[in-house]
Image: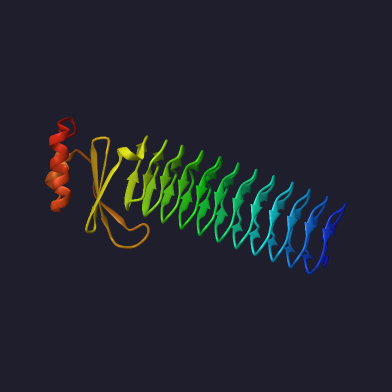
Length: 274
């Protein structure tokens, strides 16, 4: 069905129960089928295809050989092109840009000025807002990314929440991690419950995280931070102290497990405990 001021031109095809309406356009060799809806001021052109019960709305653009299908939604000012695929119940809005051979699927969502490119994948219940994910990078699980970038073969998963962070190399950030203004480079896996602020981690094997009860100790580059885990999945870590030397931290903590670790560090690395 072609309704309102919608236009279908060139060798484009609209078939089955698909609907094109509003000021939407379908041009070139584009194909729109199934129960797909192309609405508002959106456009599907080139060799792009939209099938299933997919929705393209707002000012969204779908072109080249991109494909939108299943129950996926693309709206706002989003652009989907190249060989990108959006499927499942994925939702792409804002000024998001998905290109190359990137894929967004399952119940993942993009918003803001996110860029997903190369062979990157965003899936599961992941949420990416204003961040770049490209190369062979992957964001999945319940991960949330606000700004920053995930590149190379880097991955963010689990219940990780990263704000203005960069993940590169083959680093994997998973578990219940909250990080702000931090960089994770090269390799290793961080799967502990952990909080990181303004850290540059060259290799995740250099980072020590110890949890004892509801207290989480982070030891990196000779400095110690201690957080209180208030028991929920996100944004519930309260700092007791940050960036202290092991000697100073030893005087501040009461937990015997953490105190024992700090005592061992102070003796093994006296330069760290001034």
